[in-house]
Each structure stands twice: as structure tokens, then as C-alpha cells.
Amino acid sequence: MSFKEKQSHLKKAEDADMNTNLIELSERVTREEEPIPDFVEWWDAKILTDDTINELSCDPNILIMDTITENHLNMKVFNCHIEHPFPIEPPAEAASPPPQPLKMTKEERKKLRTLRRVAKEMEKREMISQGRVEPQKSKVKMSNLMKVRASEATQNPTKLEKEIRTEAAEREQAHMDRNVARKLTPAEKREKKERKLFCDPTTVVETIVSVYKINKKLSDPKTRFKVRMNAKQNILTGFSVMMDGMSVVVVEGKRKAINRYEKLMLKRINWEEAEKKEDEEENGGNKCCLVWQGSVEKPSFHRFHVQECLTKSDAKKVFNDAGVAHYWDLALNYSDD
Image (cartoon, rainbow, N blue to C red; front, top):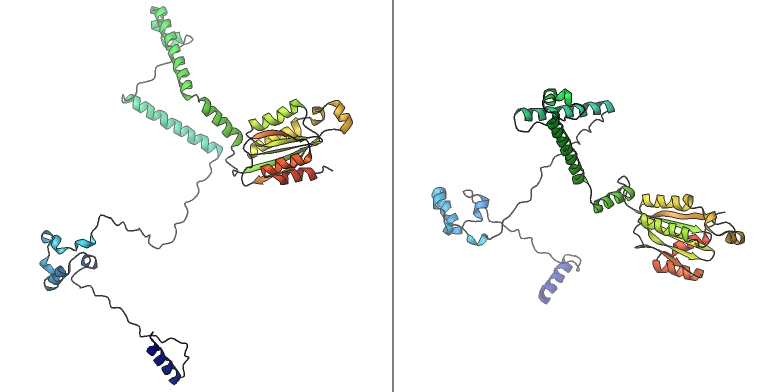
């Protein structure tokens, strides 16, 4: 706004007793869109040239499919891209969920299984009668030889016995081959065992942490081996910090593995007999207690290892380096009284 326009605006505002801080607005100008002619559809008007539209205004039947050429089309609107309109679902209420299937009783399940087996057997017999499948050979054994092939057994028993033993050996070999084909590889066996021991599909996958406090140092090699090896076998991570007068064991892993390790620490190991008799006479009986157990967002360790410290400050430094100093505080302040 120029200076003269501003002065005129202030003068008008003073004459009309208006607020001089208000800004004068000009009249709104509506933009008139060009109307689409009635003789051309709106989707055709975008691709036709102006000359073609003018010709159609004079004679709408001037264009026939055989006479349309590139001269009639506006080639600037065409490109190499293909437009795929986004499908819009019509407004409607959500369909109701399907009815839940009824739970069958044990007798109904047995009956349904019998019907399936009968239908499968009937289909197999029909395939054999049509010649599409070879009929299964009769299983002749030495015990039912005279019942099945009585006439042949009396004529040449030696030859028939040899055939029967050969067929029995073939059936046994086919059975062994099927077992070998179904046999799992060592990697599949290991995966199946781990899935059975550590994976529980009914629970949410989470990391469980358990902190154990032992009243004395883990000086017994047998007990120390059990603590370390069971953690490795149950795929648990953490560490065992040992020092004079106290030991702390921290393990983390899946729920099933943590439960098995808890049975080891609290029930299977006899901590009274784990230490030497002279140590028990001096310092009293040994005992293991579960200080804390809970779930965490992510594990803090990558493996299980044993750490031996001389003082409490060294042990606390080990916990600080692992980022779990609060576990040390819990174990240090824990009392079984």
C-alpha cells in the first residue's frame, strides 16, 4: 500500500468514526470457471483440442471413431504414466463376525474321524477298481502260508518260502527307508529340543531376571560347575560374582528356563553340604535365597560368566560396568530374617 493510499484510508476511517487500525478489504472477486459444453463429456473435453470442440459445437456427429486422429487430440496431456484410481469402498456398516464353530465332544470327534477314514478307504478302493492305482500286495507270512496259498505250498514249498521271505525283507527295508526319510537332521533335532524346552506359545516373549544371594563364597568346584553349566544348558545369560562372605548370581532368560534354574538353586543343590565342614563350623550354615525376580525390557548380558572379586567395591564395579548396579544393592541389603 502506497503512502497516498494509506492517507486516504485514514481519512475515510476518521470521517466514518472507524478504527484506524483496521485494514480495508477489497471486494471478493469470484473466479468463473469455463463451462463444459453439453455436447462433449467432461472427460473427453480434457483430451480434445479447442478446434475440435468448436467443430463439435457446430455438428456433434462430426467425429466418428474411425476418423479420430492425433490432430483432434491434445497430445500434451498424454505421458508414459498410468493412473490407477484408489478404490473407495462404499459407505456401509461392518459385516457381523461369522458364528463360532461349536466344540465337539470326544464321541463326536471319534465318529468324525471314523467317517473320514472310511471315505478315504472307499476312495482308495475306487481308484484300484478303475486301474489308476496298483492294488496292495497281500502280506503273506510264514504263519499264514497254508491259509493263503495252500495249493502252491504243497506243490513247491521251497520256492514259495523263498518268495515270502524276500517280500518280507522288502517290506522291512521300505519301512526303514521311510523312517530314514522322516528322520530329522542334527540341526533340526537341536531346534526342536530348544523349541520344546524354551519356547512357550501360550505366553508373551519376555526376558525374566532372577537375582540369587548365597551367604558364602562359591568355593566348592562341584557347586560352581552346576551353577555355570545349568545356566549354559538353559541358554541363560548373566554372571556369578563371588567374594569372601557372599556370592550373587544373576541370570536372565525365558520363563521356562528361569523356572528350571530356580529349582536348581533353591531345591536341587544342598547348600549345607556344598561347603567344607571346617568352614561351616567357623561361619555357620550356607544358604541360597531368591532376592528378586521380574521382567525387563531387554537383556543386559550376552553370555554367562563367573567373576571372582576380593572386596565389595570390586564387586560393585562389576555390576556398574554391566549397567545393573541396582541388582547389587538389592542383594547387599537383602535379609532373610
